[in-house]
Length: 251
Image 1 (tube, helix red, strand yellow):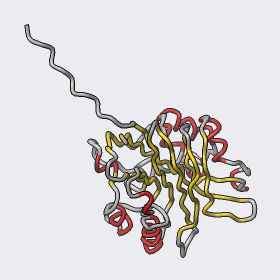
Image 2 (image 1 turned 90 degrees about the vertical axis):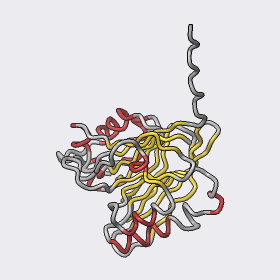
Image 3 (image 1 turned 30 degrees about the horizontal axis):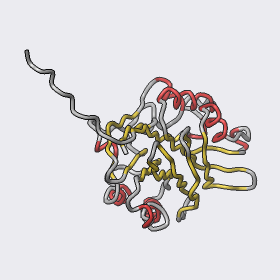
């Protein structure tokens, strides 16, 4: 009678699901304004950490709603929001949401000659580990994107010396494809989850007929990418003009 082969021990480390999602001010491809639909998309994916771009807060065009607060409340999550655009009471920007313990580190503008862009830095605690989470939405102009990415990789952000040995995740709509200078720059420092995953990389924009990979998640060395998937369903194709990108990682 042969002995039962022993299973290899499970790898240590915390497993997290990370989502990047440009929500287009919660206005879908059907032109319907619906924050609850965005929350429904996210709930169906059940991520641990979420980076959202293009949220309206107090803007007339979307009824003055605080979209970051509404989506986070529906998901029963905490959030931090940073406004890249702030005119009177109207704000427009990005947020990080999670049900895990989180603290705000920094929110600031990035160099922009066109529409103003910004970035948000939070620290999330998962089990006995902390991870530095950065969320951004880069500009439409090539020169702006390169300048913005250079800033994000510098000592004030991802390149902060205190972060050298800490897990780091960069989430965002980079408006950049693989041939772009800003994309090539970030991949010198961080790993593209779609290239590390077993699946073939998938485009995220436009949601109905995606042809461009504009939305990205990058991770630092030491973080293992278990999977990455662009979520394309009838619901996600309607909810926003971008498709959500999900990465499963091990710290």
